[in-house]
Image 1 (cartoon, rainbow, N blue to C red):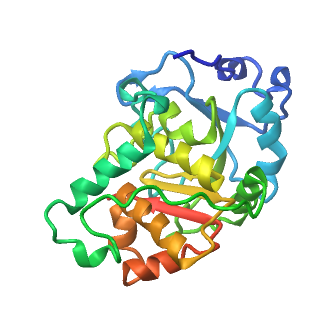
Image 2 (cartoon, rainbow, N blue to C red):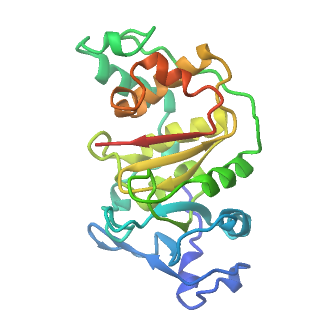
Image 3 (spheres, rainbow, N blue to C red):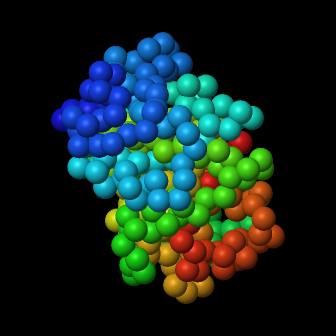
Length: 272
């Protein structure tokens, strides 16, 4: 696998990012992992919380420089990236995994004892297959900027204190793997497998990884399901990807969860 050049080391001597064609606010580089300092910075994040328009202003120029935007939660109650357990050295490459194989394995593991038959709507123990692709309702990057601007902070919010971060990654779906994020570690120890699913969602639903918290993932959706039937197929993927979303979410049933996905421009996931 060819590795992309990492532009972040340049910010150590050029904090404004002018050599990369950027005009960055004051920020910090993060290279600390659970195993000690990484050989190069994993991400940069702004010291001040993101304001409306921040994503749009910096996202495109950063992408041209080889950096992709994502919001990171720096809330004191959850800790920021320096406090997260980052394990880039134990993360594989998303392109080495097939999304359907990953989801089918998750599905089989969750349904093998038969106890969840009544919890997963019209589906049974057999993996139902990938949902059909949606039709774009917006440009994916425009939708990402809109979702980023619309994330409401404050105590108890999904993302309490959002700061813009920049990550060297090939595509938005790879951002969790690029930094060795371990938010779903109690469910999946190699986040690159989940990034393979995110890649597939990029292709089929125009998603972008918009925000990361300690154990929370927020993606924008430019091509959400338009019908209940399609939404149920997407909900099956969500169940495989993050069972707690369906089993412990606000909706009472699988079908209610699916109904809430129709036309929805943002998907949020959290792991215990």
